[in-house]
Image 1 (cartoon, rainbow, N blue to C red):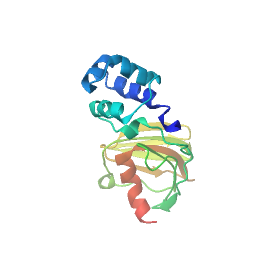
Image 2 (cartoon, rainbow, N blue to C red):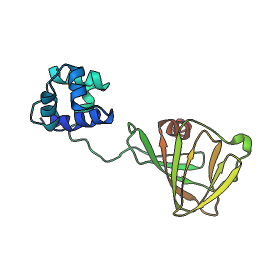
Image 3 (cartoon, helix red, strand yellow):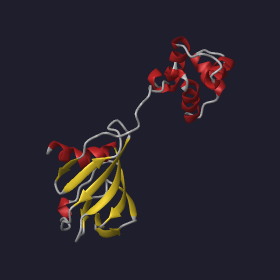
Image 4 (cartoon, rainbow, N blue to C red):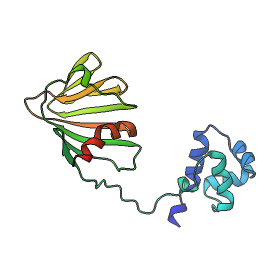
Amino acid sequence: MEELEQVGVRLRAARTAKGWTLERLARAAGLSASTLSRLESGKRQASLELLLPLTRQLGIAVDDLIAPVHQDPRVTREGWEAEGRKVCPLSQESSPIHTYKIRLRPAPAVSADELKTHDGYEWLYVLSGRMRIQLGERDIILHKGEAAEFDTLTPHALTAVGPEDAEIISIFNEAGAKFHTQSAQQNR
């Protein structure tokens, strides 16, 4: 079965991500190190009887070891417009990192009491136009080809400077994506 072809590779990756040796995981799961080695190298077929104790010890689900069948990598989510922004999703909704292409209409700087905070980090890259990042007490202008990264616990706001729209690629962790896109999606 095609879904099982990467079980060994994913199992090894999960083990090494924890910094565990083959012997440590095998002992904790009640298996021999040679059995685990053969599983990881693909020389032994995976079974639930073998995988369940391993995944319990690693703190992962069996599903984490099984590759999805023929997953289409294309992103087919629809964009939306709200609050002077046109947002086009560039990542799957289930992705742990959310990427968007955003077009902002020129707008004045916001007042200090309108700056927002939320958990996470934000990364952005200016594709066209000029972009203002209000970051705490700092007012930073970014031009085409410039990028920025900042902690979103710092009060902030993003606006296009003008005279033309600004277009950016923006990357958020899940908390940032919810904060920046949820209200806009509710207004659709």
